[in-house]
Length: 428
Image 1 (cartoon, rainbow, N blue to C red):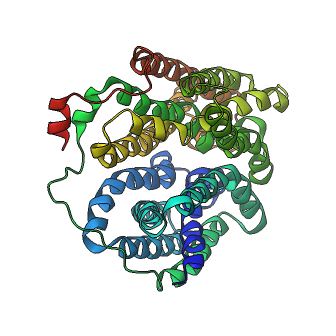
Image 2 (cartoon, helix red, strand yellow):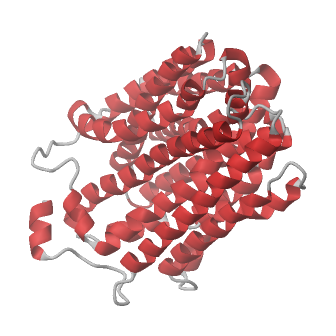
């Protein structure tokens, strides 16, 4: 394949992943209306993808070294595309859940293959530009996912969300047929997952930063559209537009931070601390979303939550890898992404479970409880009470994680804390 075509193919396939994370939940009320509002099965439309994505990232990381990164990427695109088509055609929630789990498995292969292909094909300045484009596409997927999904749901129905994903992946798959062979040498002695790195306090603290983002941002990114429907009776299309207040900062913040840090105008740790504070304050601001209140009250909190997540993107990865010896940076990157993706999967699942629990507690015996928990309008006060309870817990948990980050990251004024000789030996 000509080198100019590799990057578009990789980015097209990768774009679907953040869209799946950010956009699927906005279709849940319509899915519940068509296929049923069983709370467990409905939650797995989102949770099935997230959990499979998190678990199989580690699996594909090991498998990709053995079968070749071009093959793992191609398989991932095919599996994810087939799963999208199956999702669009699903006649029941159970089949839709299975299709979304399959999509998560494929998405993990796409992510692993994407980064590996870019690392092996590009070098020097070209490599930096390729990864910058990769980060931008991920930001675009998160920022535009709810809006695109909302427009598709309003225009052609919830099945259109998955059809659009399948269509993009079908085009990307055609491109993968011409990918160059990329199969690195195997290093069987290297561990797949080395938890001894967590003895480095600074590295552990930096690993918790994306966990805080998962608590305070990704949970709301996934389920705030449902809250807008259940509390304010806002449809999928308008809800997607409202979500831009939260997702737009994710797109613009990383580039602005990179410029400020590289010119020495702000310290990286200061950026991280500001991001954590923004997440806590923004989550508490979500308490202003009420049935009798103006929607404008939550715009500023949404922007704060978006900034809290967007400010440290990319920055925290560089800081985390700088805090460990170079010879274990690959293992450290895998561990950091396990915290990030695994945290998102578990916390999104926990949010859905808690919200359903609180809704059912306030609507005991009411047959509409499941529909209300799914975001269908009709009982705005009950949904609002449950939502406020959950976001209060989110804010508290984010604050506790922030305290842990501050205590762990502060390392006597240094930006780097290498492992001691014994730790390096055990890690390698």
